[in-house]
Length: 113
Image (cartoon, helix red, strand yellow):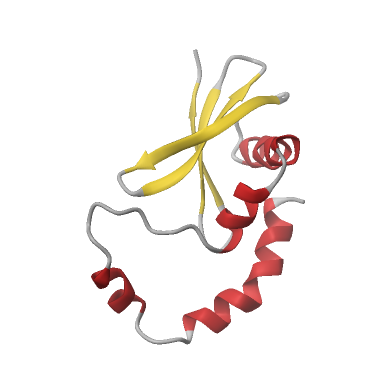
């Protein structure tokens, strides 16, 4: 399942949730040092089997323009304070931080050796 497929599957739910109340009010109730719970596409990616998840990350990395013949492993990582994502390692020695936004977009930050 690709990120684009996840985005299309989650679009109706995202639109429905967007019309519910004031999103800022929910965030105001959460302590500043507590991470927001994962929802939408990010939660779905987290539930995938490792091989499937690595395949999604491989596609996202390639779509970002970075070279990644194959993702050999991925692990949870804090992308920035309070934001969970993934660190993916490619077989060409490159490493990438991946954040899955609620709409299913993958934000890829790459590092090469």
